[in-house]
Length: 321
Image (cartoon, rainbow, N blue to C red; front, side, top):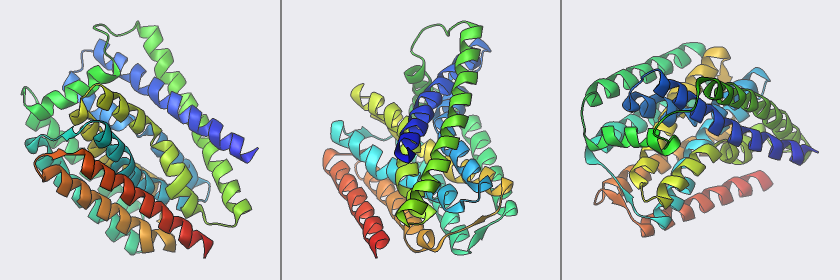
């Protein structure tokens, strides 16, 4: 029954996330919001809604290991697993201007996460600072790209067209139904996932943190996986990279920020000892590979996949000790 609830929760998160993003993008287009702003905010960060709901519910339910492990594990999976798969399918092109802006932002966010985790507790004040940093990043990026036809601006517009390729959005009632229905599915899915994952941890005699960085993190990253794979199959790999960079930044500044602001998060020892450093390492690998020839080739994608397998093997070995 527990496994069935986990699978049901993941399916609800996946389908609900897709419905929410499509409905929200449709509403924004009907309201005349620019494709740049839609791609930057709704698409890039909308796919992280499952992680947000899951982490908030886990924190409120007394499972901080799931809440924090979800963020760290999702970022690791986004880089090593998802981008690794995308690069194996089709080499990922990188726009130097966009990467030189978003790359350092991701690195600084990862370092901030590691510093907060090592301190032992991520409090409300830290959560509010993370949210302010996210708001500053959004304002700065929009001001830099507004009215321009630069590759990075076109990438954000392309994210909108990838989600909603129709020339005209759906009718208003259908968009409202998609958005509200998707949100409801995410809420129910997050509830099922958190409660069943906590029960599985108790049954297996392992910590919530381990469940958070494995099953929960990979499961809540499914929207990013779907979006990135569609982009790869269409040979729009720059959109896949932009989606992951935006999602990882929102995971730390937005999801961790909101969750800590709602409920202070004590950081489990397992995450301090392994997962934050694995996340930092994955972020550095991404930046190095992206800047080496301004592309991530198939060989580098294979290295990323092998690194993810090695990380999961270490998690499993630590769990069995």
